[in-house]
Amino acid sequence: MIGAILCSGRRADIIPKWRIKMTEENPLVKILSDLNNKAYSRSMYFFSKDLTEALNLFLFTVDLATRVDKSVVIGSKALISGSTGEDRERHLRNIEAIEKGGGAFGKLKEFNIINSRHLLTTSVEAFDCYLSHIIRCVLLKNPQMLRSSEKISIDELYDFKSKRELSHYIADRKVSELSYSGIRGIEKYLKDVFGVDMFGNTDSKDLLIVFMELRNIHVHNRGFVNRLFLSKVKNHCGFKFEFDRRYVVYSDDLMRLMRNLIDVGLRIDRIISVKFHLDRKKGVNWKKSKPKYES
Image: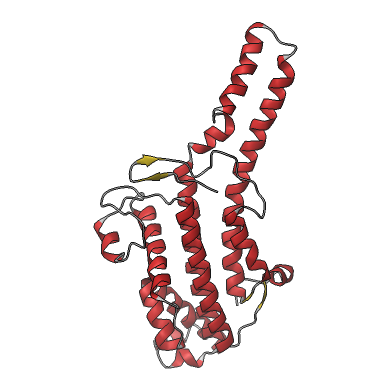
């Protein structure tokens, strides 16, 4: 399992002492591979795709570094038998350095914070895109939902050649507006306009807020907990946040946050897809059909 990297000033690793195996046994891999057999909307498919690609990139770099070190060890051991003096000592040092956590894998560990931040921010951004996309899909499928709440000037109206262009513009404008309202604004919109409860319980909401706000401090404050973060995260959900201390997510924490992110996404997806008659397929079937992102 992926370890920690840095929390409250303590040094740790996002890469484990023992190399991560790119198999179904890896907990993070299993979370996402399980989605292949679940039915969901096109929007959820792209969400799953983004998460999977981010994780696969990380695991690929780990696997690549591992293979490089393995090749060096095999080569050095093969050359030792025919080497003497300084050459022999160099081969022994190469093997020893890798066994002690050096080599390419050790170099990769120097980028722990960057790797952790990338997984964290990419996960949250993928969820933001998912919400925007599924809301847009519903609005375009049900343009009457736009008529009652959206206004457009006469000058703007002359820019459009068809009702379709106009509907797309208004839907895009609404989605853009919602993206700035935060998770609470989106929750209210889904409830008031779609008649959909975003969360099944308070715990899932609190955990999602933690994930979203962690992303914000990593993007805007290098991961340091500030008073704005503490004012928005009322329930720390077992995490130990300290003012003015850097918080980088542990692997167990990341998996907990990602599981909740996916669960919330699937719940919203199921309710909205059924209510507004959006197409649903298993993940493997979406992949085969290669859907376009835009409606």
